[in-house]
Amino acid sequence: MLILDGNKLSTIIRKEISDKVRTFCKTDIRPPHLAAVLIGENPASQAYVRNKIKACEEVGFASTLIKKPESTTEEEVIKIINKLNLDKEIDGFIVQLPLPRHIDEMKVNLAINPEKDVDGFHPNNFGRMALGIPAFHPATPSGIMMLLDRYKINTDGKNCVVLGRSNIVGTPISILMSKKTTPGNATVTIAHSRTSNLKEICANADIIIAALGIPNFVKSDMVKNNAVIIDVGINKIDDHDSSKKYRLVGDVDFENVKHKVSAITPVPGGVGPMTITALLDNTWKAYSKTIK
Amino acid sequence: MLILDGNKLSTIIRKEISDKVRTFCKTDIRPPHLAAVLIGENPASQAYVRNKIKACEEVGFASTLIKKPESTTEEEVIKIINKLNLDKEIDGFIVQLPLPRHIDEMKVNLAINPEKDVDGFHPNNFGRMALGIPAFHPATPSGIMMLLDRYKINTDGKNCVVLGRSNIVGTPISILMSKKTTPGNATVTIAHSRTSNLKEICANADIIIAALGIPNFVKSDMVKNNAVIIDVGINKIDDHDSSKKYRLVGDVDFENVKHKVSAITPVPGGVGPMTITALLDNTWKAYSKTIK
Image (cartoon, rainbow over all chains, first blue to last red; front, side, top):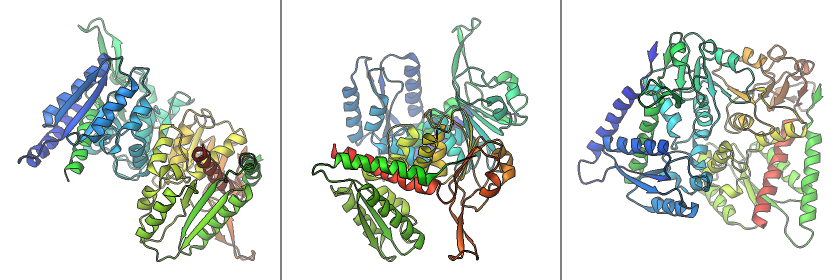
């Protein structure tokens, strides 16, 4: 059984990116610059943004954090976006989700200049991805594709089951995995809350990509021998033995599943770090286009 | 066994559209106006465009056919598109595919103003559709959804297998069928040329949507009892008994499959007419938005 180590692979890919930055920015060319917009005090969002900023520093990118209070209005957020859209020093930016309830996330998403949309959530990028033309791909699916690619997991003609149909993970990864690409070219089934025979469907899968957000949902009896398991879930569960009083688990019952599979991502340390690495990769792409 | 009669349903829906046109355009408001761009002499394309123009007349839409020779350059086509994009009298337009080889179809597609893109192939519409926000949906998938809707086919939680992953049919219908909508909300498997266990996958399907372009590909032993069959294929095969020396067949072996299914579309007269009806519906939508 192979552990698909997102931390280790991220270190390698981030090193490649930082080498490119160093080589390219030898002279007085400015480095790539990512901005992150964070509205409100959601602790998980704060941690995510902190990690993204830290990753930028690691690879030699410039970064800007725009932090605004929970009370910020939709118009104010749109104004910030319009400014970032025009700012020639910013190559790409993200608006950390979820936004406070009084702000329409889709409206905010639609305001982003697709050429700076390094989260890949704008319809223009999403549509280009679905049509198979160059685009910024959403970071989590893109990170999963990198993982499959670098670990040389054969996906061609395989039965791949995607659990979950969110716009952020399930839907885009199901699209990417079905395309005539490597990795990809799989027979993809997208399953969700309305799927009736989920156990049977999973038990027939060569590859399971679990993105449901339900702790330990995929049990050993739902998994075929030698399957490949990609666990996108990051769920907090109570753990009184831990000093934090919680621990993180995925959507897959890792301890009981790992023995029978050929490859599996751990949680934490699997898809999570790859998501940030994919964001750095998108930012590099946005930068190279701008600088050219 | 129920025949999903696309001709009959199209007549009903086109009557609804023409009623709307008559009611709305009582005064001196101009009717909806669709333009079609046809490059070259492809006989199938000529027939398709002719049918679209005829359908426009049927429902009281204005239409314009822009016909140019095979030798038309890409720049000339883009120029025509730019003009149509700006023309306030045109609500929507299509560029009939395939285009001559020397013209890049994607470049042409990207030049179309998404608000007039009644074929729904521009990334902006495609992405909006995939993200579940209002958009022009490609005509064939949209026609299939109308058919399922009006015939009250229950798709909720059903296993739906889509054969083919084209940008025009397979990919968009697989996305639409997986969304939390009615029709939709199905567990969707998208299968294609690389799928190994196709027979088994089809035999487990409650709904098969065949869009491969291979005559009579789906045989009786690939179909579950009481399945619902949507046949998107329109294939010409030799027929020396016919005066035309050919006849049209679908991707499904209709004669041998029809006995065991609960519902099936015939070819011709199933999905085909619904595609044009969906185009009229998109044009009406473009018009209502413009006129408002």
